[in-house]
Figure 1 (tube, helix red, strand yellow):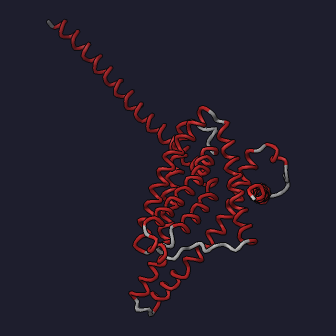
Figure 2 (figure 1 turned 135 degrees about the horizontal axis):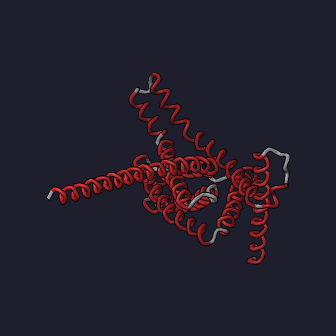
Figure 3 (figure 1 turned 135 degrees about the vertical axis):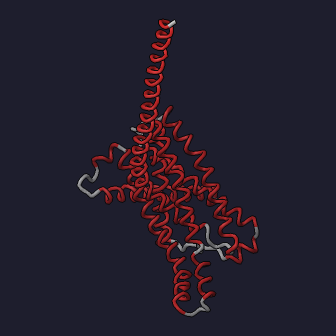
Length: 313
């Protein structure tokens, strides 16, 4: 009896030892997973920072465009309209991000092609704005709130659709540029980086737009609360008068950014341009590439429209 008990006791001790070893292995495995997750997040933080810098130009233009499109409504409709545009922007990102990632996995050449095509579009849009400013009389960019109120829901929905369409085009470039900055990384890092940039682009841009479009309303409230006297009234007047100025500045900065971003796309993705103007600072080279490409495209489109007009006549 004693012998059997001793044998069972030895087995029991061995089981305890094996259980302890298994628990240690599980604990070490758990901490190893945590360490891997921490390393992955560090890598994603670095790549997201790089991607954010590369997409900053388009984000600036996106901010300027949407700030302009979100104004001109009566005060009570500004935030609902902006919320509708924000939802549309999120849907745009949900469509674009998976398609871009799938293309990168199964047809990676398409990424550079889309980048260059998008760069051409951005260059054209930027230079076209410059040409429009210097050689044409631009139409008023802001529609009076009374007109929007009279036209009703149709005008509001049309503006929302226009803003979402513009956001879709810019979102393609934001996602592709963000993906282009992490092409050498693992798929998991690519997915997380692009998703973070897409989310930040929507929340950041439209959060700032919300603050901008409500500046005048906040200013009027301050003026009313202070009885149009004192520092609060002065602050309110500054806010009211600053809104069109800020939108104008954002428009100018966004236009320059469009040309710079497009030139950067050409400089990094077209091998021939690597050896053009090598002594110039990179920012001047990129601006020159974007400006020249935009001018050529504007001329081609102007000539094309004239030829079409001649054929029709």
